[in-house]
Length: 116
Image (cartoon, rainbow, N blue to C red):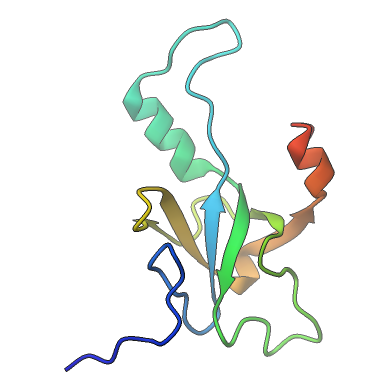
């Protein structure tokens, strides 16, 4: 019988080892001119998304580094097409990436203002 971990998050995805669970930021569904993008184009944009919010860190994240690059709640930039896309229990699409795929932490105030 499979042992169920004691601490599942609301998403139902717990990253293991050096993995980070990221909620990618929303992608545009229409152009600046007001044209609505077709579903296939939106899906491609989601796959190429490089910004998101850290939801959870695996137990071994940054164990081989002097300090962690990020922590839960941070807005981050990550490598294009990194990791696996998976739909959580809440219906949102998440990305599970390696800790080394995170390349920068974004200023949360600038994220809220839509400047980064």
